[in-house]
Image 1: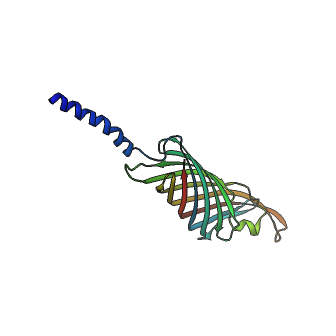
Image 2: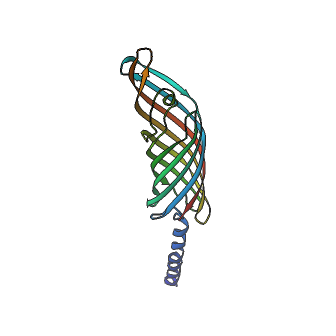
Image 3: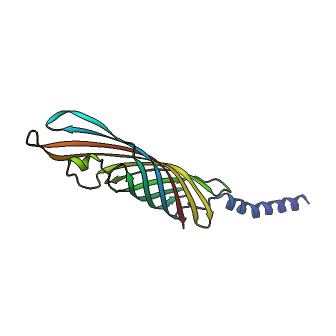
Length: 216
């Protein structure tokens, strides 16, 4: 009798265990899956610049203000292992102070945490890329081009909230740091000489992002 009870309990455990594993395992962000995301970013930033002249010292430091940020992002991630994705990202900065529209290309590493039996996936993000964002000062006193010569550090954290098969709402707090150094030529009408200035840009932005993800 005891043997029969033991066998029955063992069979129940064997039959229930795979179902429990299925419930507790992650539904999304498994190895080999893709994620396509589009998002809008709103926030503010702080810009500063440092100017040095090859013909005249000393350095000059200035603040470029606190611009309002409106940014559109598109990204596509691939899960190399469960939870960890490599994510190329393309940004369009529509508003950043008085400067022109700029773009950025980034490569991010994103880790999506799994909460058993929940449709919420917290994530952290770290990335680096390049941008053609340049400070307002360039437009008034130089002939600087619009090349991708600004480095961008990208840090983010947020939530993916899955609400139907393969679809999720994405919320994120994001920090970006733009940094570049560029040399520009200009003509000094006081000395009748051509001078060269080195301009170093630092721009830091903090934005809140809301987006839509498709996971497949």
